[in-house]
Image 1 (spheres, helix red, strand yellow):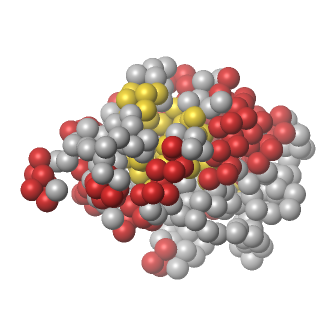
Image 2 (cartoon, rainbow, N blue to C red; image 1 turned 60 degrees about the vertical axis):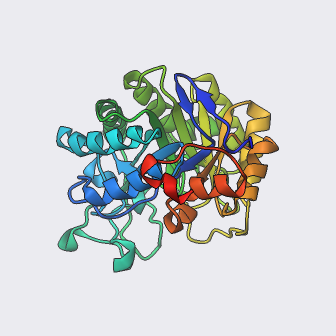
Length: 354
């Protein structure tokens, strides 16, 4: 039986075998940015589990861009080898390896979730954080350093260099992380960006940094390979970044060559009010798709095969990305295909379990 969820999707030179993708999910299990066998098994098992696209967790473009000391990185050549090994396995499973390039900004330098997500300082393995303005995520923490022009240019250069390494490592999709309250999102939102120079104030100024990063990434990325941006469609807070601005930004980046907007929300401020529920972010992906014509990805509390099938079949988004549900079940695509009576290729080692 044919379903829309298991129909192929062509983006530039890459054909995705279905519309199921694995969202970037931090594992907090690296040392000095290096991937290890945990990442191989985590990402590889989801590739053998049938998803078309496997996006590696938020990977820091610099040491100070990490969320925690356990984050993956791509700020030096030595990081490349293990990624090549992981990506070769993903490709062997007829899946596409992707990477999310990120800088955490003021939300960096915290301990791993199982160690309390506590702010770290120089005495316990932490570092100074940076942001558009010297305003912390929590009022009780040491404020970040407001980036000056030299600092801004360094971040742009770091994204450029990491993109070059990503290509060498065998990634076939890049996603720029401009969501969840991390550095690029911090510049977008007036709740975290109080600058009075050309990077603050108006919509044009607040988007300037992201567009400069985009241009730097494109200068190294192959033009025939897909390029995504993840955004938070709304801050879920009064006076913050909103869906109207997200639509406007999506129009701009579509014209500049971005292929897909991965539409999430929230994460910028601690006082956000998110109405959690199944499909709660899907209307944002649908609106951006319909008003701009760009491809979109839907995320957030999508847990059922029929739910995911409906999202794609009704044109609300082009991809469905799974995070926590994929942690619960790495073989999600195989299971969903079974539920929807879709015929897909299984790993030959698993065929007797069909």
